[in-house]
Length: 262
Image 1: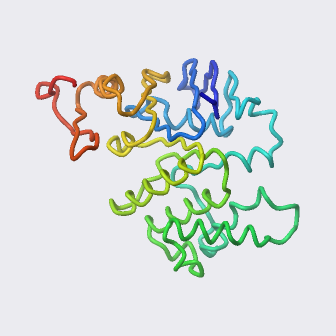
Image 2: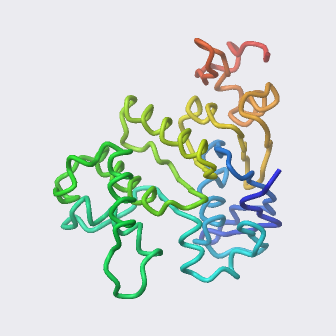
């Protein structure tokens, strides 16, 4: 297995709270890994550490090299980020927001190239935001805005894409579109890591990282019974994993109604 991201002995705090408690994690290249767990497990904190956005102790490696050793521009070309409820200027057009993703590929004060324009158009079409390219971000709904921010991350065309709650404000059809985008990226060799509250969507990933209390509780195939049992355990038996029309889904339940594992 080729490792795209490796975290070793990661400890991180948010204010006075120790959130990550010696996290060790390997993220395989060319796969989709979903990080799941109950509220407060440290999922988003772990993703921010992997992205180099949060102070921590321990070491993160990107493609075999310490993350801190990468020149900023090269790191930004290889690793793209989509965070929760990210901001952008409401007066910027959709096109300009997506074009921001191309900054790591441009020289200082240089004009965007034909390759930059092509990457932005592709990203906006992927997220079905192309028709609004001349509208400003402030004119969009929450779901439309999220799709534009997704386009910005896609336009980087990075080898590793990290997404924290990318489905926020998206209705079910556009969640399905997001799933198709992720699968297409992985088919092209991109490494995708997502933090998701939508467990049924997370179960569509290649690999599942189940977190609890700042540590990795389980790491394995999203289709494996052991991963499903780990999910049920960290949620205290309040969800159960079933197969519906050939796909794994998480259904809510009370502990006394929980069905035996498979």
